[in-house]
Image (cartoon, rainbow over all chains, first blue to last red; front, side, top):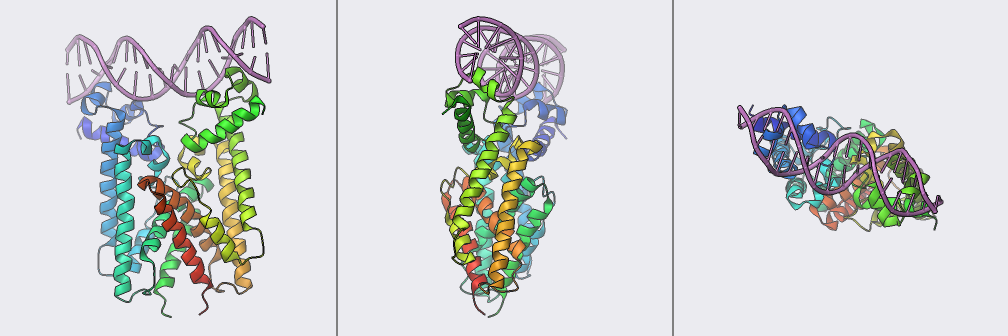
Amino acid sequence: MSKREAILEATKALLWEKGFEATSPRDIQQRSGAGQGSFYHHFRSKRELAAEAMDEVVEDRIQRFEAIMAGDAPAVERIGNFLVDRSDALAGCRVGRMVWDAAVGDERLRRPVERYFRHLERRFTEELRGAAEAGEIRADVDCERTAALIVAAIQGGYTMARAEQSPEALNRATEGARMLLRALAKQE
Amino acid sequence: MSKREAILEATKALLWEKGFEATSPRDIQQRSGAGQGSFYHHFRSKRELAAEAMDEVVEDRIQRFEAIMAGDAPAVERIGNFLVDRSDALAGCRVGRMVWDAAVGDERLRRPVERYFRHLERRFTEELRGAAEAGEIRADVDCERTAALIVAAIQGGYTMARAEQSPEALNRATEGARMLLRALAKQE
DNA sequence: GTCTATACCTTGATAGAC
DNA sequence: GTCTATCAAGGTATAGAC
């Protein structure tokens, strides 16, 4: 692994653990084993480095999302699989964590974060519409709002789990969202 | 207003606007019009000041919550009123905002934050159980998980709104939660 | 109680040798 | 490309006058 890669990997880890503000160039240098020279040779500033790191994190998370959402199972089941794919409840979402950091004040840093959330909302909306047309869920479901509620269940669940220092809070929220999905599928 | 109160008010405002890490003692001194002397005369450190400020913020938010939840209207309606009581979508929740700050690493600072979320979860659970017993909602509703989903809808909605720089994301999430409440009330 | 002056550390970035 | 040395600015806290 080149120094450049080592710096990027260390940054991704530290942004997840501590956020942007609380991570210093020194932290990154120590974790990556690179010196000042390598750091500022490869990246113009801490912000530019963080932006590149977040691009990679979001690309990676979107690919993981799509891997989970792939397949022929009913949409409700595949969405449910994404809801339960939550480890590290107390560490939080690698992307959502950045939102309340100074990161969001910087357009370049906010861009990948926005991309992630818009992707999830759009894809859930599409999946729910497809399920409604296929008769898997009730036809009168508001797919956009339901999609937003599912994304919020995950993000809000992470916030609650961190506040309460208990992974169970996240589980309650995501299980609540799975109950909702089952209710939508219910024949009446 | 005494200098002590002015310092506390300025701190509450800045914690909401910028968070704990990004707020410096100087910021607080400038906003409150107090000097170094007053600051460290009344408060031992920035952390102690922030903890006291968060105690007040949480007490205030819980009282507002209880004011909205009071009355004889059906629980579903009162919960719905709390869901739509969201101004300042882009500023975020005064309490939830702190969760991803260094604040949560400090037990004293996390305590009021935890209190707030546990209060909301517990009260929604109670209200939903009451509604189930009164026959206002279906008897088979999992009240704990539904309560958690409602809290998460708000917190997650704020995160999405901030990420997308659009208050509409929060509205979609909270409206999704209101749809869920209506569905629970539906007679089958 | 409140002020100004100051101390000390960390941060983010640059300089220049190798 | 990588290192060490260094810098200016700002962060948090203390000292001491009034």
